Length: 257
Length: 257
DNA sequence: ACCTGTGAATACATTCACAGCT
DNA sequence: AGCTGTGAATGTATTCACAGGT
Image 1 (cartoon, rainbow over the protein chains, first blue to last red):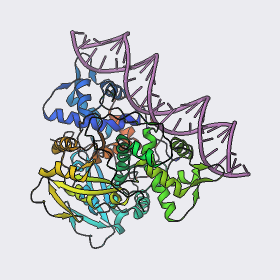
Image 2: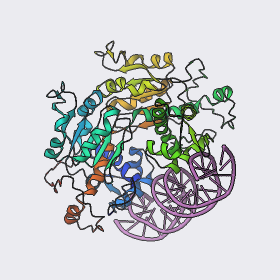
Image 3: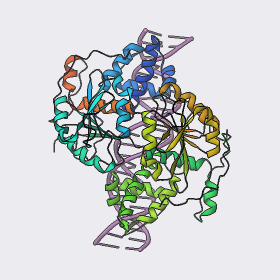
């Protein structure tokens, strides 16, 4: 096996750490805003504040790309915009297909952020024949039967899956079979893909559950300790001055089903 | 200072690492599927495969929750479902408001995954008076003017922002002012919140940009190396049969506007 | 005087590998 | 014999703090 042995090789291509790659779009957005206001240069401190990170991290991140700043001055906004865009591959145009044109798929098709920077919705695909031919966001919906042809004709390498969970793996397999090597998955399923294919997942209910976890911690630890004999070591007293939501123990439901 | 001093204290409440918390929903989903098929017990190996992680990581994750398995046997599915649900705070019902009922907000309102487990869409809020009173997913849209009242009347502590970027910070401030302490942000902006408030971000264009970065690496490194004197050590040969999209240097736009 | 770029230090996360219980 | 639970080892990310340019 030439290309690597394990299931998920972390795709850390060359020098740039994944964590850094994940922040580059943030920097780019902040820089674009500065560029629109014709700000010529920016310091790591200012840019970090705009991107919501700390400046040491930002400088370290940029150091992986090269030495694009000027000591004593800062970074040239336009130049950095270009360098980061290039690093992210946004100086070329990426045709994207969206599969599954339900509520979410339609929302994605309409989402301006797609088109605005390097990405172009090349096709919308759905399995429902009733949708075929109808236009969503000005783009006609095509039938799943033609998926492979659509991918190949448009040279698509990035696919977005917005189908129900049950259809996602099958759609994924067909996308990959047709040559797609990057997938953004909105369906709440774990997708299995061959080596060399990247999958990123966006999962609403996972995000909510993570928030619920922290929310529960903020107020309510005592109430649970009170109801269960599982003796937790009574975490640090809360003392948050925020809103003092009260114990709120009147919602009944303890089990989901 | 009792409550913590810096801008974002990582919210690592007690013992459980953030990375583990982020995986609990995955485990829970896999376990729920097993539960529906009436599978009584599962080994770390099997469950890990279903959740798309490796078994050592899964066992370590579970070890933070307690010793809920049986050596030589595995984990009791029902029991684990309950323990993880409880840990995530899903044994109670979380009323959620969605602010911004455009395409995306409507998609979220309709998304089944919200309702299915502990979360309940308590209200939909939008600034457009034309929407007020109309029902989306069976829930009437209310006007932003009443935001504070809605939050308080429903005891909402989790808010979802699906407004345009320009409105997001303002909406966020009002949510926080009314007592919301967890925010799921779909708007492409960095939100600033006071200490003690959690924000999670879901950003489509960031995800796509990360994919584009890796995509660019897979095929096309030579083309870039060819155009720039930046001597890369020529990463592992790609051998992807994908689509051979070519160097494609003709799209000009480096800037959006 | 100022701000970048980066080694060194620290913190966090994953993986290994095996002791210990069933 | 089999599988969990976990210390120890390794790998990755963040932060510190300051040398080195402008």
